[in-house]
Length: 216
Ligand SMILES: [Fe+2]
Image: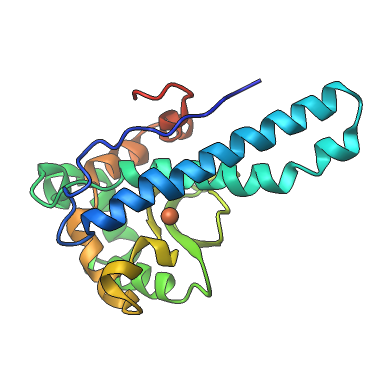
């Protein structure tokens, strides 16, 4: 059985994404929110496996929604931390860090600016909590923008390239209800190198951050 899962360390300090994302948001988001998904995922997996081992399928099956929700939360946040980086990092410069991804974005949307406008509109269109992702479609290899509710994760076929958390806990302490400015400012701290690596690599490599070891 996989797990128990552990909270991955951030590849930067809690204050490293300021002023786009505040230290307070990052600390709570990582050490409390993400940790809760990991803790509750492990509990649900353990309860499900124990019930199954004792022949209680009904109790095992009752854990599936908790596994899906908290597992999605762990997957989404692990990918999200990796696709952010300090604005001063060379990885935050799309032209230098993501030439192939940028070319594909240009071929799909016309320009980076047009893609950002389309992605921003999709993010603003999410009702309630959810995520927006740039993905590489499994069937065609084409880029596409998808939005997913709650903690649904990009786990069926498509490859997650860049994700943005649109839960209130991701922005509210700094931006209040101004989601548009959160979206505008997060482009300063997008890790284009991570996006390029996911875009070029096999799908499974995008999920490597989810290995059970903490220090990755
Ligand atoms: Fe979140």
